[in-house]
Length: 310
Length: 247
Image (cartoon, rainbow over all chains, first blue to last red; front, side, top):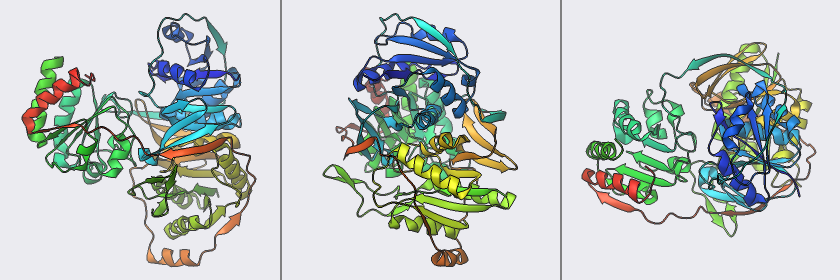
């Protein structure tokens, strides 16, 4: 039996909660995993010590994990990991690291997995318009989408061993231009509220931001909105040529539901659509549809949410 | 003078409806196009050439049908077009595809490789970083801008904002949609592309360890609830809390 290895996802120096989902995914593939925690300070591994269903924890300590260089990450992890099948979260950085680690070990990488049935792995293709199931023979590196698998329980207790590693960093950060807004990115948020051209003007996105602030959401946009208004940056675009999101709740406001847009958000757990056109395609994909202008619906929505959560 | 290679891939038009027949996607009536992010890779590659006086070669792995996107690349302004293929290849996994590419790229003597951040079919995004690892080169992904000298300084989004990163060459750079316009082919370019010759190359591919078992349509969602009028928004807010449990 090959080793199963889960690499903990790092987010702002701590372990991302979806790491617990990776443990469940590893069991679906076929075995109790070793949990590997990339870190600069091994004490962050304490937060996952009680995860159920893991055989041991290896904290791999290296300066490279402070940065984003995928060569540094992959080489440091490779030196510290046994052979086996490796799972990590399908985030921008981890997908890069997964591809490098697989290439380094001459094994295959399968990205964005949403279902695991033994060695059969299913991923969305054509931005979610279809699914593809592949059978893997031998070891592989697998990235798993967040919010798909249940989290492993919390009644374990594992020893943590600490390994020092060094990595082969090939790029150098010159400067970082800080983002003006502290708003969440659509690809990281559990709730996303997006506006389309139906918002009428970019200034009206302030109404979406107000709702977003109430419920802790990120603000996104359709391609039509991004292409029409310079004020709406491409970084907000959800869809086939923008970001693919998979939140618990997706709220589409003034978005018709073009196939381009659906491709980027259709796997959201719950979808709310607000649109004045009852025939808009988005309603066929919505769990809750509101046929109204955003001017009518958003203030009511905002007030109800504030009353419930405030 | 750098030898610049840009990777291009043929994919179904992103506006196309995808149909599964039996347990395979049926692309027979779908228009095939260059993967959208590849257009940003071509633009970034040609700008690199213009800044440093190098040459740009567009490279694809695919059958004869994929020569159209090479001609499209030629019409936009690349110098050479190369197709790598062997009739025995099918369902190449990441390991096989990257082996083919790294062998070809070393053969071309490339100093920098540009590609799209992911292809619009699989969306995997493995090729850029995986190829770089195989070649022992650096890489940067989701690049939205570049400045060229002996190295390439790229702009890419990171957790806290946008980072400028110095990437020493040789390197592989995967491009996202940038804050710039991509050039479109002009009449002269299209005429030249018609006459351009596609160079055919071969390579060795290791056996794939991944087999495509099946394609399927995503399960249809059960019909949702639809409400009329803005006042219903308060009811929807309550359902989100009490029925969906997402607030």
